[in-house]
Image (cartoon, rainbow, N blue to C red; front, side, top):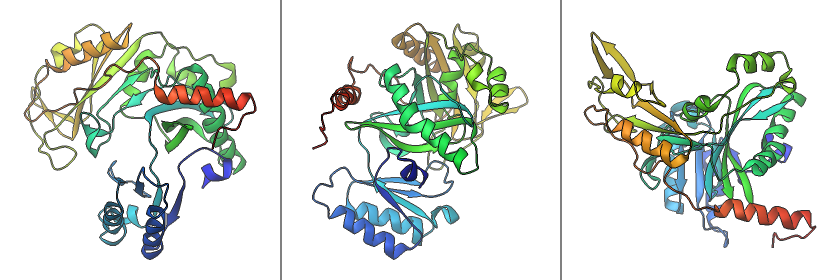
Length: 344
């Protein structure tokens, strides 16, 4: 609602608390002749990263809606749903610091939500990430700040709820330009694991400036390296998985140059390190280039082992020199500046 009111670009959608009304809307959307990308059904509440169903057919969408609103598979989180058009393009995450008035963007990142290579399988909390993303060059970052992040912060302040902290915009870079998939009111996971190793400024100084509404006085500095993080997950994740599997190799990898192992779903039992969650470890490597950071990260995870461990093999895989969505956005911006309407 805030995005619509503030003119922030996002997918066309509607919010429902009544199942029959939601079902009627679904059917009307799939009857549109221009509709071909699909529909997204979202539970409007916390659902452990699993409350979003991307549906390519009406039957899939009806099933997702029924499971969410009638079968209540997500509990109270599914009592209200958002149904919106599926956005197609390259995903990107742009996080920013805010003191309630000033917005300072971080480096753009790209995370991978699906469990399998090639973005196959169910959604997860995130299976890997890299930064900076070539799909959000500096001028596009500034455009997203101007059209997305600043209007969101201004809109919150005008509503008497100034937003102070980290604002995370999950974006889809469509042929029509960046569109917002979601906002998060926190650092992202696994985005944090690639962003903080690249931050040169003192994070505490930034937090204090945000709290005192003097972020505009601070220069946030980043180094020129690249970072890649790989998530090692338990067998079966994001569905049912077992805990208590011994993890070997973490200490050896922690000693490697420019590599750090973030522990998430782990616990200590005597002198043994055991799995204790779905996403167990996030192994992050930094290097002067993305390719080298990727090589380092994969070399590191290959030295860690636990029963059932799995991770994606395509995180930060080489991308085209000129990402199509960015090129389309640049062309669109150039025509707009010239006063030419190319929407048709």
